Each structure stands twice: as C-alpha cells, then as structure tokens.
Length: 150
Length: 162
Image 1 (cartoon, rainbow over the protein chains, first blue to last red):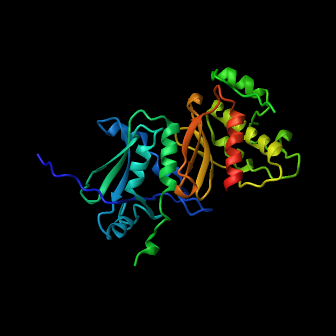
Image 2: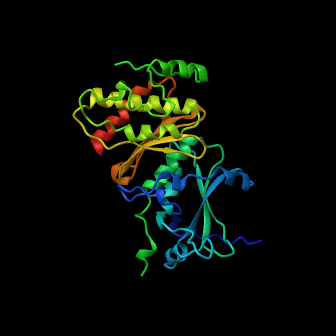
C-alpha cells in the first residue's frame, strides 16, 4: 500500500475542444467548459461527475496539453486551454452557502501523466452545477493557444 | 407593475394556460418576432431578439414556453424601468439535455438563467470574480418568489456594474 501523499500543484489546465466554448466579446470561456458530463457519473463508482484536467506540474505541461493528439490528424484541444488556480476549488468549497461541492484527484493515463479530474459531488442540482461551472469559467485565465507557444 | 407568471403548479397544462395569458405562443416557424408585444414602444433595440431566435431549437414545449416567458419578462422590465439604459444582448444556449441557458457573460461577472426540463429546478445565478466582489449566488425561479422581482434585481445589478 502506497501512503505517499499526493502532490497537487498550484494550477491546473483545462483544454478547449470546441470553438464555441470561447466567448468572442470577452475572450473568456463559457460555463459549458466546466460542466461535467453526466455520462461520467455512470463511469464513476462514487456516483460523482467529473471533468478532465491536466495538473500543471511543470512548465512543459502547457505545451504537452496543447500538442496532445486526438488522432493522427487532429489535436485534442485545437482551440487552446485555460489555466486555473487550485485555490479556486478551495474558495468555492469554503463558501458558507456551499457544502464543499468539489474535490480533485490525479488520474494518470497511459499517454498523459498529468491527467486528473475536478470532481463534482453527486446529487448537485443543474442550477448549482451551472453556478459552480460559471465560477470556474470566470476565474479562468485568458485562452492560451499553440500560437502562444515559444 | 404586476406580471403574471406560472407559480408552483408546473404541470404542462397549467403552464400552457398561464403562458397563454401573455399571448407568447410561438408560431409553427418558431418565430415570435412579429408579435407586437415584443416591439419596443420607445424605439430601442430589443436585446432579447437573438435569444428568442434560438427558442425554435428547444424541443420541449414547456421549456420553450417558459424560456419565451422569461425573455418577455426581461424585455418588459427593461422597457418599463430602464428605458434610458443600454445593456448588451442576452445570450442563449440550448443544451444537449434539452435545457436552455440565458446569460450576460460580462468580463468580471455573469448573470444568467437556466430553464430545466423539470421547470422547478430552473433558476437564476450571479457569479463574479474577485475584482467584482467574488459573488456566487443562485436561486429558483418560477416558484413562490415573484420572478419579475428577481429579474428586476438582477437587471439593476447589471446596469450598475457592467
């Protein structure tokens, strides 16, 4: 049994697959980018829902994420990514009107050692999930694209 | 000003009947733009036009009618209380699950409404970043609290802060 504490960096990245997740007027991203897919709840034993992220363990993770391929000819995140502070999760969880609705985890994949999840507690109403997703969206950094890579 | 709207009884027939009081029915083409009730009486642009154009994409008639009604309330309140103020158009998003979301996505805060298939789960929200006070609030609409008062409060926040 491995009891080594899991390290989480101060920031994480969320890739943008669809262009309509970016708001043209502000350059920000829509809440849909952070709304969990209800199908994930079926896949999880705890009944929670999650969204995939990459933990920004080092300065190479941005380029790694932007260059991830969906298949031979397509990038997984052709519209870039946004960065969020891990502290934002703690802030949402600490609000007196919230009952710690979020958690996070590492979930390494074969081709992605940085992969993890932001986990939405089971039983949240659509209204609460949207408010949380909106809060995450509004706290996200400007969109970073492959054009920004050195 | 009193605006009638569906209260706690969210059965299909009840909502349809009460929405009928506004005469906000949608034509077979999905367009309600020709409805004279939606034409501004002061010549200002109607900021809900683009959002209303998405209503035809909503499959569920109750969700569609409720969304239509919410836009009607927004427009009516703007015309009656904020006639001298310009605010950007409200955006609409029809979601994969059949629900619809209306939102003003400003840079530092967002105000929106979600209309769910279960109408009783529909609500409003206001979220802001740190520079705008780190607000995070939500509540239900189309229940015992007068929807127009909630909308009026949110419109006031937008106009004072955008």
